Amino acid sequence: METSKIVKALATVQDPNTGQDLITANMVLHLKVEPPNVSFTLQLPKLDADYKQQLNFACQEAILAVYPQAEVHVHMANPGATASAGQGGGPQKSNPLPHVRNIIAVASGKGGVGKSTVAVNLALALQDLGAVVGLLDADVYGPSIPTMLGLQGQKPTVEKVYGKPKIKPLFAYGMPVMSTGFVVEPEQAVVLRGPRLSGIVRQFLEECVWPPMDYLIIDLPPGTGDVQLSLVQTVSVTGAVLVTTPQEVALADAIKAMNMFFLPDVQVPVLGVVENMSWFTPAELPDHKYFLFGKDGGKTLAKKSNSMLLGQIPLVQSIREGGDAGLPAYLNKEDAITREAWMKVAKNVARQTALRNELLAATPVVEVKR
Image 1: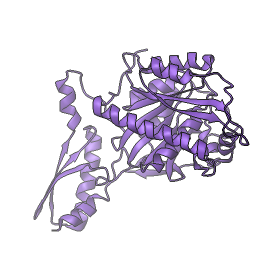
Image 2 (image 1 turned 90 degrees about the vertical axis):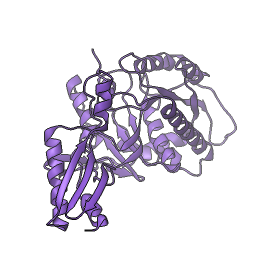
Image 3 (image 1 turned 30 degrees about the horizontal axis):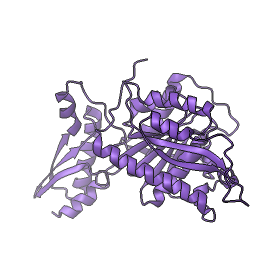
Image 4 (image 1 turned 90 degrees about the horizontal axis):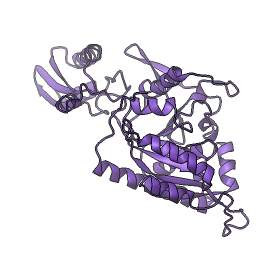
């Protein structure tokens, strides 16, 4: 028996929850091959009976297809179970995205501040830094990311993993992307109550085949509502990026969004603030700045959230044109000033995320009481 052949066989087995193979997802530990015995531990996010049974049978079948005489011994382990029991907090809710290192929520207090624009360009700039990045458009009422990424009219496919349907995200500029805009018609009104909103968010997180990623950027709807609450009840959110414009009206609403993340039952760290439309710069006068919406709104919000100003994005025509044309502003290499502004935001987000992970424990998947 060759260990390499056993590993290749296990690489054909998919986790029914994430759609990732067991080897890529680093779920196989302590593999020992002593003919005719093959033993190993499967590190699982949860230990319910159906889940264990599916994986056990699948592993047995894959190995026996290569070595029919093998005696296969599979041990199932959940590293989080003991820790949660020791804390006296009851059983720990399983993480539906164990292969995603950081989940970053992009939030705002009101619409029209450019939150989706920030989410798209931040994701692309992080990818340029060498990270593997995905983008989830959770703004179910106004999904604009399909337009910004040139994906209008395209539909995700569905595949079955051990009999369970899984959604395959679309790809744009090398990034996996999922949005409500892929499953509703462009002019269709989305009229949903709280439970349906929550169900859509959970479906996008739990039933999509997301690849292993360094960052999943989630574009939230404006305000503080069901989608935000469903997010923190479903996954461990690494941190939030707040988006505001400099003006006082936007700042007042942004503070409300900030306070939602600081609620005792939520406690999601704020990584920092992006001030969008900080000043107007005409293309023909690149050195001129006109502060149409005032000044220092981003700095004020960063101070109140005890975080940092991640960057200031100017109001320039090319950003609007890029969003409408499906070619985000960050990809426009001829606009060096704007491109540099997005890269500064991305570098600061990466730095703040690393610092947050070094100093703080993972955000628990919370149960919010309404």
